Length: 179
Image 1 (cartoon, helix red, strand yellow):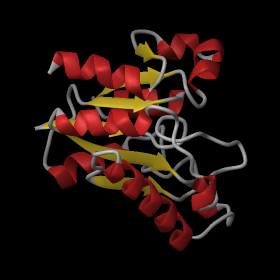
Image 2 (cartoon, rainbow, N blue to C red):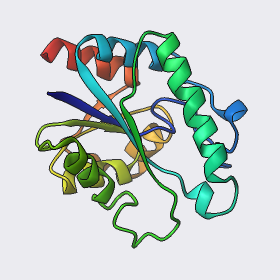
Image 3 (cartoon, helix red, strand yellow):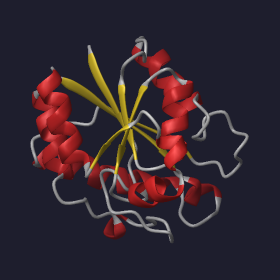
């Protein structure tokens, strides 16, 4: 089984410091939907792992989050791709084992899909994503979109030995050549 785990905000869609609070605010990063379609056609199972503390902060509710994800699924499907599952942590509390940088969300993906995460590409745009992937024994990859460029500039040491790509499309190209 080829599995890939993607962060959402800043990897698939444009990020916002004010949070993505409505389906209208969810805008794909150019090339990301096509990248997911190409990964799908290359037999990758695509799973999303995303912190969504806007729910815990009361900025939007679970129904709205579901509508945002419904829009994402539809747009990915219209591009020819598929997202198998979306895992999210709505909590604000950094101690929550499921909130990245803690590995709980990734370990839950491993448990539910009954697979080992060793070597599973896990693409994010922040140190949280890198740390969660490393703690779950997955393969962290970083994109410069979203908070990625800032992460590289301010947290270079945390990004040591992590492959960096301009965007999800470039990461997909690389992974597809490996398969």
